[in-house]
Length: 144
Image 1 (spheres, rainbow, N blue to C red):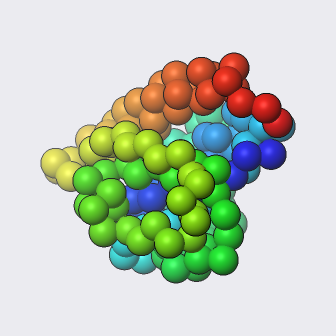
Image 2 (spheres, rainbow, N blue to C red; image 1 turned 120 degrees about the horizontal axis):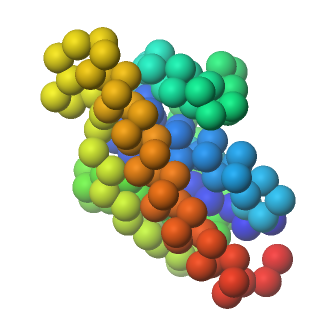
């Protein structure tokens, strides 16, 4: 199995979404982890929108990149510019494939609960589209 680390700013939504999507869709090929520049509480909307597609993450925990410093990853994927600029890369020993996917924070700009839920759904769907596009191509080019 190939190992993936997703990095974002706060690990309250995007990186956890990406982790859970990959672990669900590609569970026989990849195992994903997530971390963030700043550790914050997981947003409750995350549980709701992932549950809508059959992914239960009620027991998930958030991590900092340093929590994985002794692990090797095949892929390190940043999900926002801040994580790309501020996350350490020492744990990869230079062997990981790096990818950046700029995914907007769904919390920004939402002024009501309904808008926030809609934004989280859009983020989930955009992430799934980007991840499937990338990893479907990767599967054709790597040996497991």
